[in-house]
Length: 113
Image (tube, rainbow, N blue to C red):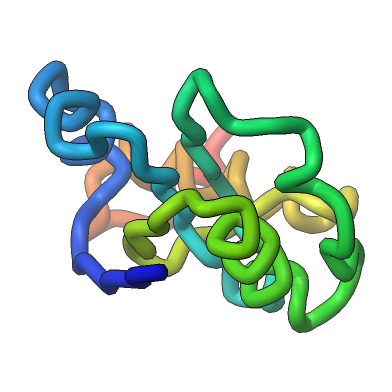
Protein backbone atom coordinates (compact mmCIF):
# COMPACT_ATOMS: atom_id res chain seq x y z
CA UNK A 1 0.00 0.00 0.00
CA UNK A 2 1.07 3.58 -0.58
CA UNK A 3 2.14 5.96 2.21
CA UNK A 4 2.69 9.56 1.14
CA UNK A 5 4.11 12.45 3.14
CA UNK A 6 2.54 15.88 2.78
CA UNK A 7 3.70 19.05 4.54
CA UNK A 8 0.46 20.78 5.54
CA UNK A 9 -1.06 22.66 8.43
CA UNK A 10 -4.11 21.64 10.40
CA UNK A 11 -6.07 24.50 8.81
CA UNK A 12 -5.35 23.16 5.32
CA UNK A 13 -6.41 19.69 6.41
CA UNK A 14 -9.71 21.05 7.64
CA UNK A 15 -10.64 22.90 4.44
CA UNK A 16 -13.80 21.79 2.62
CA UNK A 17 -11.76 20.51 -0.34
CA UNK A 18 -9.65 18.17 1.80
CA UNK A 19 -12.24 15.35 2.07
CA UNK A 20 -12.33 15.25 -1.74
CA UNK A 21 -8.54 14.79 -1.80
CA UNK A 22 -8.66 11.91 0.69
CA UNK A 23 -11.03 9.72 -1.36
CA UNK A 24 -10.96 6.67 0.88
CA UNK A 25 -7.52 7.36 2.38
CA UNK A 26 -6.59 7.98 5.99
CA UNK A 27 -4.87 11.20 7.07
CA UNK A 28 -2.56 11.08 10.10
CA UNK A 29 -0.56 13.90 11.71
CA UNK A 30 2.29 12.46 13.80
CA UNK A 31 3.21 13.99 17.15
CA UNK A 32 6.61 14.93 18.53
CA UNK A 33 6.58 12.01 20.97
CA UNK A 34 5.97 9.29 18.37
CA UNK A 35 2.21 9.21 18.74
CA UNK A 36 -0.22 11.19 16.63
CA UNK A 37 -2.24 14.31 17.23
CA UNK A 38 -4.95 13.74 14.66
CA UNK A 39 -6.21 11.00 12.41
CA UNK A 40 -9.04 11.01 9.88
CA UNK A 41 -10.19 7.68 8.50
CA UNK A 42 -12.66 6.81 5.75
CA UNK A 43 -16.12 5.73 6.83
CA UNK A 44 -15.51 2.20 5.54
CA UNK A 45 -12.49 1.67 7.83
CA UNK A 46 -12.94 -1.43 10.00
CA UNK A 47 -12.38 -1.34 13.77
CA UNK A 48 -9.40 -3.64 13.20
CA UNK A 49 -7.37 -0.54 12.22
CA UNK A 50 -6.70 -0.18 15.96
CA UNK A 51 -5.47 -3.74 16.49
CA UNK A 52 -1.73 -4.18 16.91
CA UNK A 53 -1.12 -0.47 17.57
CA UNK A 54 1.64 0.12 20.11
CA UNK A 55 -0.17 2.60 22.36
CA UNK A 56 1.78 5.02 24.58
CA UNK A 57 4.97 4.28 22.67
CA UNK A 58 7.43 6.18 20.51
CA UNK A 59 6.17 3.88 17.73
CA UNK A 60 2.44 4.59 18.07
CA UNK A 61 2.13 6.57 14.81
CA UNK A 62 4.26 4.10 12.85
CA UNK A 63 2.30 1.12 14.15
CA UNK A 64 -0.99 2.93 13.40
CA UNK A 65 0.11 3.51 9.80
CA UNK A 66 1.00 -0.18 9.55
CA UNK A 67 -2.39 -1.21 10.92
CA UNK A 68 -4.13 1.05 8.40
CA UNK A 69 -2.15 -0.21 5.41
CA UNK A 70 -2.53 -3.82 6.59
CA UNK A 71 -6.28 -3.19 6.34
CA UNK A 72 -5.96 -1.88 2.79
CA UNK A 73 -6.23 1.82 3.63
CA UNK A 74 -3.70 4.17 2.05
CA UNK A 75 -2.33 6.84 4.39
CA UNK A 76 -1.38 10.46 3.84
CA UNK A 77 1.02 11.64 6.56
CA UNK A 78 0.54 15.29 7.46
CA UNK A 79 2.51 17.81 9.47
CA UNK A 80 4.17 17.10 12.78
CA UNK A 81 1.99 18.42 15.59
CA UNK A 82 1.66 18.50 19.37
CA UNK A 83 -0.69 16.09 21.10
CA UNK A 84 -2.16 16.08 24.60
CA UNK A 85 -1.04 13.09 26.70
CA UNK A 86 0.02 14.60 30.02
CA UNK A 87 -1.10 17.56 32.18
CA UNK A 88 1.94 19.60 31.07
CA UNK A 89 0.88 19.10 27.43
CA UNK A 90 -2.38 20.86 28.27
CA UNK A 91 -0.49 23.71 29.93
CA UNK A 92 1.75 24.03 26.85
CA UNK A 93 -1.37 24.20 24.67
CA UNK A 94 -2.79 26.97 26.85
CA UNK A 95 0.45 28.96 26.49
CA UNK A 96 0.47 28.47 22.69
CA UNK A 97 -3.17 29.60 22.47
CA UNK A 98 -2.47 32.66 24.60
CA UNK A 99 0.54 33.53 22.46
CA UNK A 100 -1.52 33.23 19.28
CA UNK A 101 -3.88 35.90 20.68
CA UNK A 102 -1.10 38.09 22.08
CA UNK A 103 1.37 40.43 20.45
CA UNK A 104 4.44 38.17 20.03
CA UNK A 105 6.74 41.21 20.24
CA UNK A 106 5.57 41.68 23.83
CA UNK A 107 5.60 38.27 25.56
CA UNK A 108 5.28 39.91 28.98
CA UNK A 109 1.57 40.41 28.26
CA UNK A 110 1.08 36.76 29.24
CA UNK A 111 2.14 37.56 32.81
CA UNK A 112 0.02 40.70 33.30
CA UNK A 113 -2.97 40.36 35.62
